Every structure is written in structure tokens, then in C-alpha cells.
Amino acid sequence: MRRLCAGFLCFAFLATTVSAVAQDTNQTDHPSAQERVKETLQQIRKLPAEWLIGPYIPSSRELLPLTNEQRADVYFNQTFLTTGAYVLRGFTAGIDQARGVPSQWGGGIDGYGKRFASRYGQFIITNTLHSVGNAALGYESRYDLCRCTGFWPRTRHAIMRNFMTYNRSERELRFASPLYVGSFSAGMISSVWFPRPHDVWRDGAYAAIGQAGWGSAYNWVSEFSIDILRRLTGRRYPQNFPQPSSSRP
Image 1 (cartoon, rainbow, N blue to C red):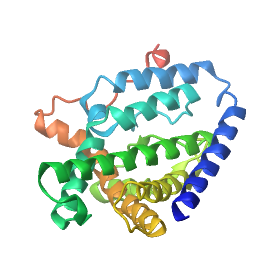
Image 2: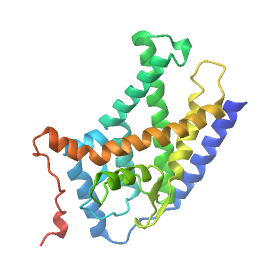
Image 3: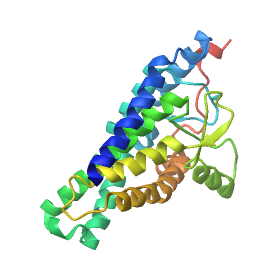
Image 4: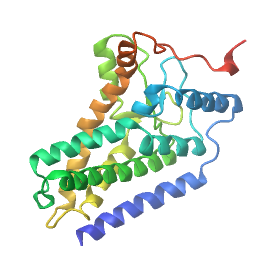
């Protein structure tokens, strides 16, 4: 019965958000702005940081809303083509392995494989619900590098962006409700493949709490990833992202 409730909640969330997306029109009336967004996405894809942390907004670029097509592109890259997504799931699966959770999966490579698949499957569900919810509400799905300097201001920005995101205006902050609804729902749904008995509500709560902690840590790495890459490459990695060609004289 609990699994049925979890599935119903997930279906209701998807139905509501998909309906909103279907009714959504282009998010901007300025083609040149969308050209700049498209160029930024293409340029970032060529840089090592994008493969590490996923699509992001450089501090030198203005925040512009995405079209639904661009959102789909960001979702695919975040979910399947970002190295950091696999590394973090591998790390948390290792912690589960060390704790022996769940104990029925045993140890060794086989046990670790099940735990990694579980963590990654939960991530796919989370990011799917997160992305659909963001599209419906017009929320920003990418991490924006802080337009500030200093270790602590940038750290505060990284943590804050795990809880707050920009709405369609790309200027007003809102609570990142799709992220935590997605995390909670994914935690509940993941109980389907866990050995019984399992409390779906508890699993959902743990997943949301995990997002608060691990999400903040991931944002922190994202914030300082370019600094790390510059140190590793002897400062050969570009510090400032080039301006879009459409804005050049």
C-alpha cells in the first residue's frame, strides 16, 4: 500500500508538471538572448570542467532562461555525461558498502554493484523529477558560479544554491522545491528494489536530507573546480570564460 502511495505521488507530480510544460511557450522573446545561451552551452561542453561538474553558468556570463529544448540538453548531460555524477554515486555506494547497508546485498564486487546501481537509479529519478519540475515552474537547472571573490563568500553561495534557485526572471530566488520533491520521491520509489521490510516515508526523508548534505558538497566542488583545474594544469586552464561572439563588436 505504501509503495502504491509513493507511485501515486510521483505520478501526480509528473502529471502536473508535464501539463505545465506543455502549456509553456518560449521563455524569452529575444532570439539573440537564446543564441547566446546556445553558444554558451556549446562552448562549455568543450571544457574539462563541464565534463566534471555538468552544464554551468560562468561568472562572466549573464543569466538567461532556457528553452525546453535546451533544458532537455542540460538534463541529458547532467544525468548521463557528467563524470561527477558517477563519482559521487560511486563514493556514496562505497559508504553503503562499508556500513553493510542493506545487509542482504552482502559484500564484494557484487554487493557494491547493487549499491552503485541503486544510488545511480535513485539519482536518475531525482534529476528527472527535478528537471521536469524546473521546466514547469521556469526555475534554473544549472549551477551558476559565484560573481564574488573570496573563499567564504563563494562557499556560502555554493551552499545557498543547493536550497535556492532562480525563477524565470533569472534574478529572483525561490526555494528549490523541485529538487527536494524529486529527492524525496526518488527515495520513496527506490524502496521498491530494496529488500523488505522498508519504510518508504523514511527512505524519502533520508534521500531529501542526503540531498541537503551531498548536494551542498557537490556545489562546493563545482564552485572551485576551475581553480582546482588551473592549479593542476599550471594555470593553463582558462580562468575567465570568453564573451559570446554575438556580443563582440
